[in-house]
Length: 164
Image (cartoon, rainbow, N blue to C red; front, side, top):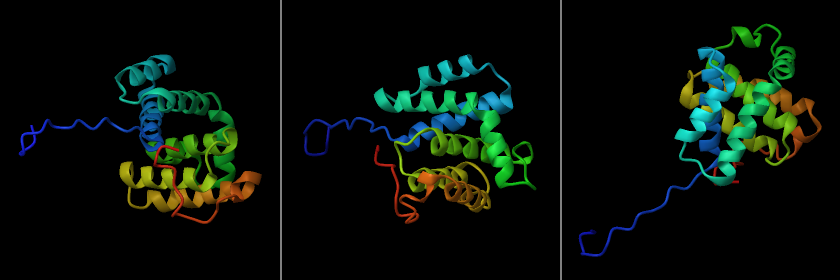
């Protein structure tokens, strides 16, 4: 009850792609660092997730796709960071870079700038203070190297956190 006697309104949780990407990061980290079976991790994470509908499907597709294409993704990242190979990067940064590289190379439903901005925010939240700059630099190089990478390159004000 509200103080005025009216029933308390329950606001349903609103899923976003940011939450889906956070789930993807947790899945990839657990598979990568925990060396746990891919199917077990994905199914377990999805069963405990509050994501629904398209966000759940998005998270599953990005997690599976990233893991399935990780050799190609790691090769791409190695070319972008010749002195800092993926196996030398902190695990959180490595998996943020992997999942974002997957989205840029294999999906076209989100503007590249928005995907990169989300990756920077994840790096700031889950890794070190320097990680945001590192992730930004690597992904900026990737964006310049792919045809669709220049679209929406206006910068940090563009984001798809509102459920896009």
